Amino acid sequence: MKHETLMLSGLFAACLLVCTLVLGSMLSTSPAPSQTAASRTLAVSTSLCAVPGGVRCPLPRG
Image (cartoon, rainbow, N blue to C red; front, top):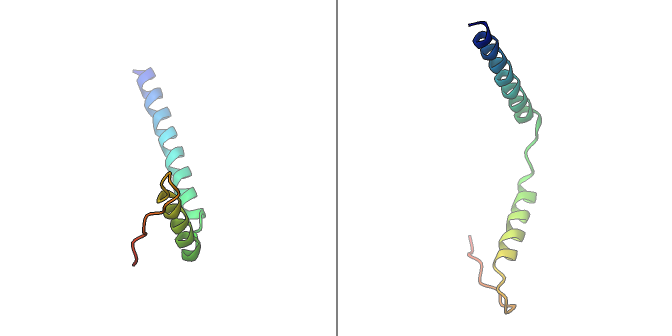
């Protein structure tokens, strides 16, 4: 019985530590500016549209 209680309290402490670290990281990060995110998305979508022959597929507008 004592072993199970010790394991359960250790699991509770580990879960509390993980939750605290995740919450702290969510609260301390700052979002990326929208212009930077938009340019990254365009760069990724442009690079994904390349085909082996050097021809690029048209990107959707809008």
